[in-house]
Image (cartoon, rainbow, N blue to C red; front, side):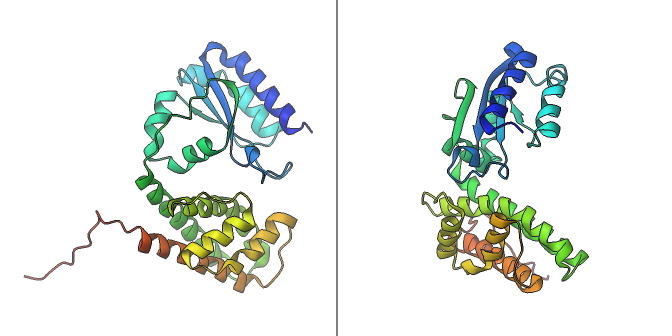
Length: 250
């Protein structure tokens, strides 16, 4: 098994070989450049900036992506042109802010730093993504109510994304978020009036791979905590441009 640095060095080497002059830059972002990275557990998130995203150019990278995803078991790199990524700042606010606030340029010029992110849309993406997670969690529970064997993997899978959204919730309140998971949860909970202990089973699951506690109460507390965060976002940052007009009868 290759180390993190060895994997990244080999990835850049293969990208340069097969993309050639079409490759502008390769940037590592996320937990791998923060102090909460756990080798062997955390993912290596990479964005590649290409000059062209034609199917011919993408096809040349098939072997590289297959090696990275199948052999190295890492998530597929994100591919953009520089202009496309700049234009996407209004819909990928969370992702681009994550790139800007923690990145390592592996190859080429840093094309991320000067992208302007509209922060009013950042708050909307947090809500959208949180509501999507909440809906999926409810659907999973309906399929297997009270079944720890089925539901614990659901909790494990959801928590990484939820932790990111809690970190961005702190940012939406105008603060610089902490780095470590426990501190992120504590600060997000304080800002939103959420019970931080609702996330304790998820933290233990993340750190040890083992679930402790009663699944129904733990799952319920998790859902309630996410609902509370959403309520706080709506209360503190209302969507003033949206008006719900009641229909009146003639």
